[in-house]
Length: 264
Image (cartoon, rainbow, N blue to C red; front, side, top):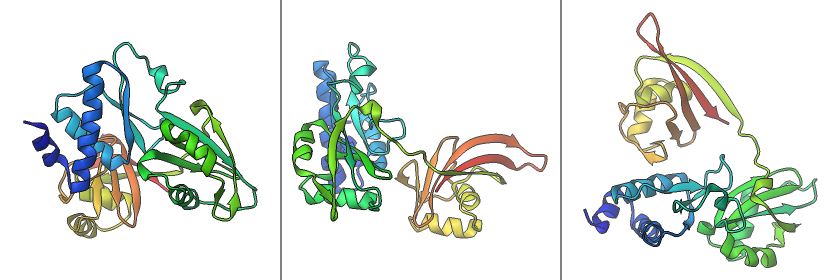
């Protein structure tokens, strides 16, 4: 199968086709030349599509990296055999991390910082995760735009910022708040897991899935009977996100005991 067909079979829009072609060319270039390369930042959905395209094209030696293990937005990276994992965190890393400090009593949100970045002329694909804390915000960008960020990001909303570049190892990543749910389901169907995790009737869960409101591992899924496996991630518009943490086995009544992790 040629590249155009591979991309067309995985893309869900014309924008996807353009992005996936860029990622495929970038990773292929690194593979051909034996050099480390990285794409722009990708959303979880875009990462899933990129992985499909790359594997369908015979490329398997790649990974996604966003500065920390908890990162959602990541670049797709090709590392040749001679290049160790420390390259990702060292001086040659494709990413740069910044810390923006501000007056603690000012309440700033993720939207405030993203809006400020976009307002300064930065493209979304060059910005990674944004971690807002009390009095400070750590965020990631592609290293190529780091000098521009240093000179142009001076405020978020009406709040003045004090900006400094920090090592990736010093990122402050807030702990994700989760709720553990233990339940039993008749089968490991998507509608059953959705109904259990979001506390609703299975009929309602099925209707929402068929209406295109659900995604499985960051890609849309319209099949209520789609089987779910351990560590699969499910999102439901208007309700949130959860992960099937473990399948604990069958009960005496023939139901399946599961543990879910629901993100707050």
